[in-house]
Every structure is written in structure tokens, then in C-alpha cells.
Length: 113
Length: 110
Image (cartoon, rainbow over all chains, first blue to last red; front, side):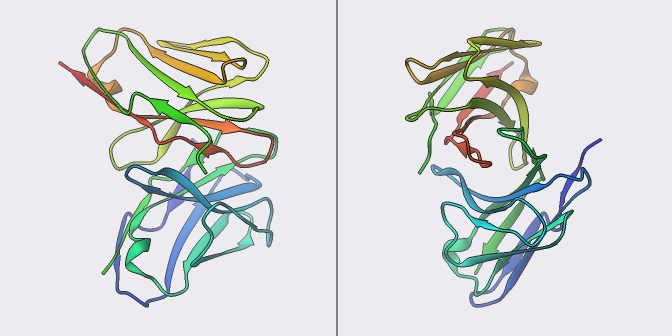
């Protein structure tokens, strides 16, 4: 069965900390995505990657960076966490091709205090 | 900005009834997808309908697409308690990324 695994289910961090959210997929997918989900705002795309070492900004990249050193792993980095980054973070992957369906991880609920 | 907008925002029905959710979008699309999200979990893909298709079925799910009205509907027939979840539409405008709406929260009452 296909799987997208996010390293943490819940995470609590302090303002100013550097935070790493990890995502691993076992489907050999080229595309990987990071979304954040907030009540009333739905899912918003932060960053995505078409291939190893490639990244593209989504709709809300400010305050975030990403790393994709290996095909199966896509990391989201909060350089200096702030309280407005408290959110549910969802990782997803898809194979190459237009409009292919996304496979999502279970999400990481991040609280920044 | 969000491409799809679901309507209604919340829907509560009795088990066994049919549930209909709608999605409207603003610009032309290649395809439209529907996803389900159980509380606090990731999204699960339900169905994809391409821009040249008008209707698609999968089990108890029926999706329609009207490109002239820029709208889609998701019908769940004979609802069950396990259908309680949030439902999202997502549009593909030709880029690799999907744009999601805010979702419809569906509650099935026993």
C-alpha cells in the first residue's frame, strides 16, 4: 500500500526556534508538496518540488524553506518559528503528469508558543 | 488564492439520506478532484473528473462537472455514519499543483 509518512503527529515549539518537518514517501513519486491547513482558510500551498533539488514557491512561502536532497524525502523548515505558524501541516506526493491525484500524509499539528 | 469554493460549509443529514455538496471555481481547469478528510487526519482522494467529462461514478459517489457554469457537485447516496468527514474539491489549472477549496463539513446522524 502506498504511504506518505510525516515524522511527527504533534509538535510543540517555542517562538524563534528552527523547526524541521519531515516527510517521506515510498511510491517513487517525482512531485512532493507541503500545505498548511487552517480553519476557515482551507489548504494553502507553501512549497512544492518536481524533482530532487528542485523547489517552487507556492502561495504562502514566506517564513518557510524546503529541502529535497533525496527523491523520497521532502523537508519543510521554519527558520524562526512564530505563533502565526501554528497550524496543521500536510505533506503530499504525486507521480509525474498533469493533475494526478495526491497522496497525503496524516499531518503534523504544530503549536508555536 | 483559493480556486474552489464549496457549498454548503456544513451539512447535517440522517443516515440513509443522500448528501450533495457543490464546488464552484473561477478559471478554466484541466480536471477537478474531490477529497475526504476525517477529523485531524490527512486527505484521501475520492474521484477525479476531467474537463471533457460530465459525470463520473465510484461506488456510492457521483460527481458531475459543468464547465459552462464552472461548478461541480459531489453526491453521496445512502449515507453512513462513516461518511462523516470534511470534503474538499481541488482544481488543476494546468500546473503541477492543485488548489483546494475550504471544504464542506458533513455530519451523518444515526
